[in-house]
Image (cartoon, rainbow, N blue to C red; front, side, top):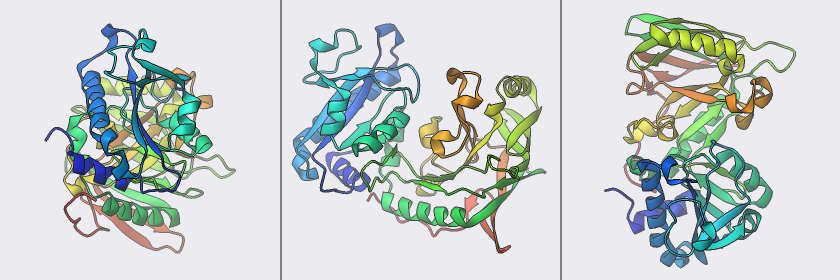
Length: 390
């Protein structure tokens, strides 16, 4: 099936946005290419999906306890997580193909007015709107599920039981919040071992569950990860994150030497080694160990599709670069220019990095206790999930 049925959409909206007294209206948001030549098929399909969701949900607003479901469009901002335009178009009929002559297609409204009038948002956009919606969600109190790069291959991930997902992520958060460090043994090509220690002191984990329970909460959908920023050494004591981190890039293996939470050098195979070495020299902040992410959707039968929005939610991953949007301390000030700022996830599930395996990941607590969380790429904490959508 290429989309959710009406009944599935209603169940999903209720699971993602449990009813709050303030809820009156849901806005579905898309961004438009400025000109036809910058458009592409995946972007067009995503906009058609969004228009179809609006057509399906608008007549059912009352079943969701809402007064209306509206569709909005704005001119794309060209970068992920850049500030959004101040004027948006409320779609009265068909979506325009580009942002040229927007006023001919509906009513132009101030974004601030929309944020004040709508309490729920779905944002299947080309360029991620997560960061600006997070900022405005806190300011105006709305909830939003951001879906950058969404396409039909992600539909199965919307059918999982997000209540089960939520309970797993809460358990992971409890473990990570109490851990002092994570010790990981990777195996490469089933023979070479690499060890990493990640310093988890002075940090709390964050649940990204695809369920937004409180006013002001904003995050990705599909979702399903708990993440934590390793200690980056911003206090007087240095970070104890260190070791050798293996990463498979295409067919090549790279080995990053990590000291004090930074990739200091890289060795390995092929042209990718030279490119990564140059990148680390040019932008040292790119080598920051910015995230340990624990996705759980693989256990629910979801497979990778080559899109980070989904693939990072499948299993364990390590983020390089920017961390300030996750609660860390590395951001624009540490990069040579805002346009060079990056957060890049390396995803350790067999389908994404078949030559690299997480042989064991254990958490170490302040009392010396050691608890294994992953063994041979599989979580050891959870029972088998029940089938079905919440």
